[in-house]
Image (cartoon, rainbow, N blue to C red; front, side, top):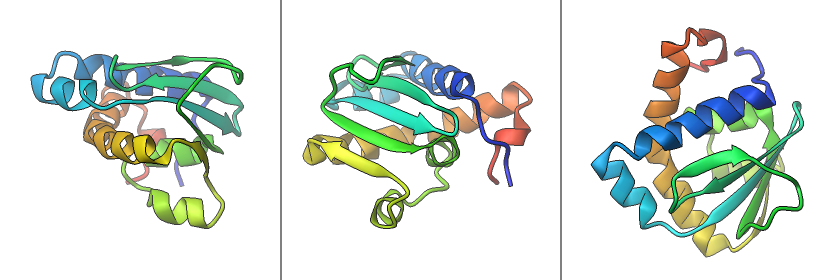
Amino acid sequence: MPATPTAEDLYKYIGMAFEQAKSDPILFEKLSNTPGVFKVLTTEPDGCMIIDIPNLSAVPGAADDEADAILRMTGEFANRFWQGDLNLTMAVMKGHIGMEGKMAIMARAVAAQTKLFPTYIELLKNDGRTDLLVK
């Protein structure tokens, strides 16, 4: 079982994945044309990240920041999601992940973000963070 990432790990690697997408023309076009600002609230560890899909940014935030939708999950589930190792629909149905807000925007954004999964995994590998890899 992989280690649980710290909030700083999530901020760093998710943020870096979005930064790298800015230099990939295909990812840039796909993501910058997808609407939505999301707040991801994590527990174990406690954290808050604001993901602005069209501006390709993911930065630490505050629980009261504005967003189109909110996702609530543990750090472990966030790490698994960003590696493509989590069936989001099943996790929501089982109560492991909470979602609220504009679901149509969230559905488009989640589909677009999956293109960043290989980048997230590669960033972990390049930093020697194999302890966070789920596969």
